[in-house]
Image 1 (cartoon, rainbow, N blue to C red):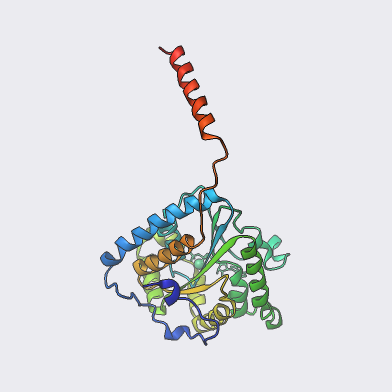
Image 2: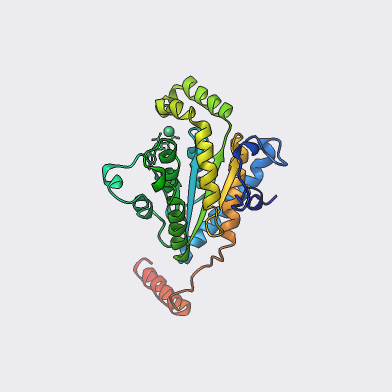
Length: 282
Ligand code: ATP
Ligand code: MG
C-alpha cells in the first residue's frame, strides 16, 4: 500500500475529517505485522538522511500538527530516532513570545527552516496561526483568512530553495484522546505533561476540525502536501509516516557528492604516513 497516495489531502475535493476513520490500520491487524515493515522504512530513512546530509543540496521540513495527545511527541521519538541527530533538529511552536508576536506570523517559522542538508521537524508550526488563532478569535477573520495564501507562497519559496516539505495531521478520535488523558493521570511519570488547557481545548473539538479541514484543503499543494494519518493506533501511525518519509527521501535523487581529492595522491600520502609511523615505532 502506498500511503503517499492513500492519505494525501486532495485540495479539489471537499474534506470531511468526520468521514476519515482514526482507527484505520489497513491490511495490518496487529502491531507485530506492521513493525518489521516500519523497521525497514526506518533503515531506509537512516540511509537516505545520510545521503541528504552528504549531498548538501536539498533539505527536508516535516510539519506535525494535531490536537493534544495525538502523538506528535511519539512520532518524533519513534520515527525520527531512525536518523542521525547530526543534521536533524526539532523546533516546537508554543504561544508566541513578545518578540515573536511583534513580527509577522511567518517570521518565527522562517527563522527555523532547515539549511541545506538538514532535516527539521516542526512540532506544531506556522499553521497554529490559522488553527488556535482562528478557533479562539485571536485575530479577526479578515486577517487569518488571508494567511492560507501567504503560507502557500512561503512554502513555495522554501521549495524553490531546495526544501522538500511534508505535512502530517495526526487524526485521533475524542474517545482515544480521553483514554490517553487517563493514562497520563494514572501514571505519575506523565503528570508533568498534563495541562488544564488539554481539557478546555477539547471542548472546541468541532471548531478545531473545521479549522483543520479548511487549513488542510487550502494548503495541500503538490510542493507541500498534507497527509491525514489515522493515529488511534500508534504502531500504524508510525508505519504510515515512516513509509511516506522514506519514499519521499528516496524520490529526491540524493547522491554522494563527488570526491574532492585525488584518491591516488591521498593513497601515496597514506603510505608515506604509515612508513614514517613504522620508522618511529619499530
Ligand atoms: P503536548 O502535546 O505535549 O502538550 P504541545 O505542543 O501541546 O505539547 P504545549 O506547551 O502544551 O505544547 O502547548 C503549546 C500551545 O501553544 C498550544 O496550545 C498551541 O496551540 C499554542 N500556540 C502555538 N502557536 C500559537 C500561536 N501562534 N498563537 C497562539 N497559541 C499558539
Ligand atoms: Mg499541550
